[in-house]
Amino acid sequence: MARRAVILLAAALAAQQPDFEYLYRQALEQREQTLGKDAAKTRESARDLGLYLAARGEYARAEAYREAAVELADTAAAATVLHNWAVALEERDAALAELVYRKALAIRVKALPALDVELATTRLNLAALLIARGEAEAGRLASAALGSFEKKLSAMDARTGAACGVLGASLAIRGDVAGAERLFRRALAIAEKAHGPEAPQTASALENLADLLAQTGRESAARPLLDRAEKLRTGAR
Image (cartoon, rainbow, N blue to C red):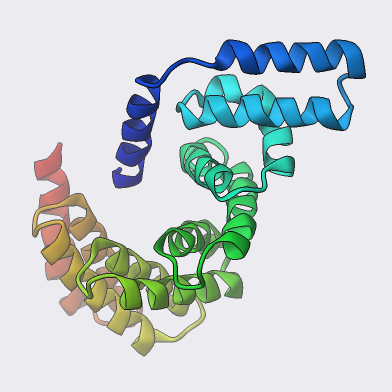
């Protein structure tokens, strides 16, 4: 939900800016007519229109130009647009979101310092998508993100906690119970501090830790955590 709020805010701010869509469309149409739809310059215009619309949060309208936007994007500003676009795609099409995240990541790796927080955020979001497949890459991405957050942000920052949760899940899938438990407990402590003891993020952190405890034969320790998470979920409805 927090990432969705950021996207909506960015779209609201973009909507306050002058509307240059007509100019982008005019350039695209002229190149289509004179050069053809598959010409390099035409595809650059399609990229520019797609990124412009996506930067305004108009993802449905930008979709027609997504392929050119992803293929030809090459600036840090474009990477930001692609990252936000991937966030918007996650619930609808995880595979497509992964593709867009990977492009944003490739650009940010080249354009930003190694410990940059925005670069780390793209790594973490991509890691979260890969967790379900049990891929080792998810752990590497989450570990790199956590390292950046630890160096650049507060130890109790919400992003640090999110990275602990994703890395903990990766370790759990790979059978490192002790490492996963340590990170899940840390994620819970950060969630309670950063979001509050009754926040949805805290409920998620409780559930992660409880699931690990239950799956490793500690049902009695898991039950109070699950009960607390359930009360938080019920109270949020």
